[in-house]
Amino acid sequence: MTFSIWMYVMVFVVQIVGGMLGLAIFISLYRQNRKKGLAWLVPMIILLVYSIFEGFSGSSILGAGMIVVYCLLFLASYFLLKRKKHEEEGLAR
Image (tube, rainbow, N blue to C red; front, side, top):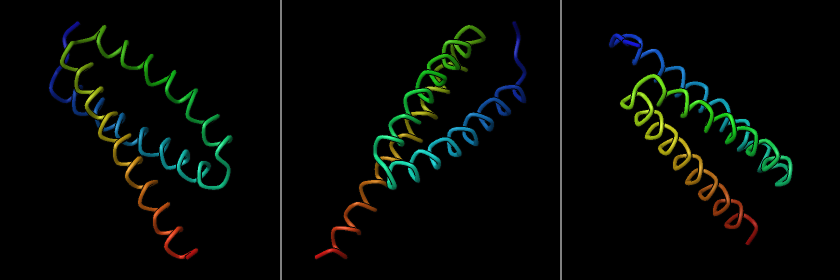
């Protein structure tokens, strides 16, 4: 299966937008109720793993790029949650 450069770009854009939306929902749910947030995260991770396998079946570059995109999104959401937690603790003191 051959991919053009536009196909790679579109797949990465869709992965970034979808990942950002999913993690935004996770962050809002997690801040309200930890169990609901984790319940949202589990199916999201399962679908993420499935999409990575599909990416690797198309091309190794595509799969590796998807892994990098998802790692960056998860790191960004982790640091955002960590910063919000410290802000809430600072206000509570």
